[in-house]
Length: 266
Length: 282
Image (cartoon, rainbow over all chains, first blue to last red; front, top):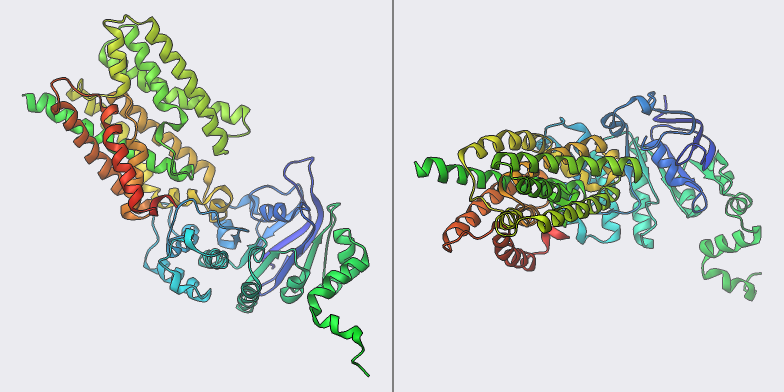
């Protein structure tokens, strides 16, 4: 039984406005799925559908064997947590209090988090390496620290699966690599992760499977090697093959490429 | 007898009104994720004012004026929620609610203005003006007795649901992903805050500032966690209201309107607190 099973899912903001269809995948324990697609293809809509914030327009969706439409918000939150693209903190909670909010689905309706919840929040902070920020107000964190606090909140939720909406979009190169290491560590611990990204390299670095949604709303699932091939990326983003090769060549080889035509070789 | 029939009810009413406005404001600032929101954002005060002014105009007895204020206060928020739900794409959308509240509040303000123009300028107009600026001068023992149940009914859900109401400030999608039934919880907050504000306003007239300022003071001292800031806001609101009412009745031979004093005392206190720490407003 998969953590998330989607079969022939169609998604959209309203009936008659379907953004993407034929979304079929299974997220197993310890697995990482990357979602790629051009802007506006429906990546965020897919996440909102998986979180049962909006209903699927067609097809079946299961969270650990249950139709999310039949689950109360707490039950969904215990199965699946969400890391939004950016933190929009309206009030300057401390990082600890912010992470404690992840316990909401685990405590009684009229309760406040207790000692056990605080211990879980502290563990989540140390897993993300931000224990030293425990008392800092979230409004004062840097972009990278905010991302880690958001993931720590998802960890405190103790759901077996986590959705991350472009987790690396606002991060610098170093923080991106640190985040990649943390995420593969979480997957190694047995968590199932789904993340969206605009960087094929990131999908290649982390994902076991890649789900693409093209501009026409057609979804496809496959192994990273096949899905991230230059031909596929060209079709997905509406680029010519040479453009994709140039873009990924520059990324992969950097300045070294310039030296080569000089003919130092044999 | 003076103590029992006049002073004690007045003190009790001041405490209840202060706590009610501060509690309602605290919950609203979380539910609308905005530290600038006050309990009358959805038009409850304007609506209650319209009811009271109409009551004065038609020569109702004091209890009749209060009942009219209470009823129109609740009805105004009801209208705002219905309009937001039917015409503005859902009561779930806080922006639609706030904008509808502003529009309906402006209509109620126009109604108030009409009654003031039509009112007898020697008799009714001063009564209307005094009521709209807020006063506890007319409080008798019956008022506190009526206020207590309304405020307990309004406050109990806020206290019980204190943790969950705090998570509403995360925003709709995030709060729901955390396992919160946001639509239902937000309606609970609106209903209870409206009930308390309508009860407070019908007993004491429109009193600004308390519902906006006291939640800030509480968060500055206790931090932004709603479950910690709420109890403090209730205590501060009650204390401040009592202090302001004491000043109102003792500083001059005529009673000063509470609305004037809350602004005169509140604004400098508010600015001082804000200058000392930006902690409560990000």
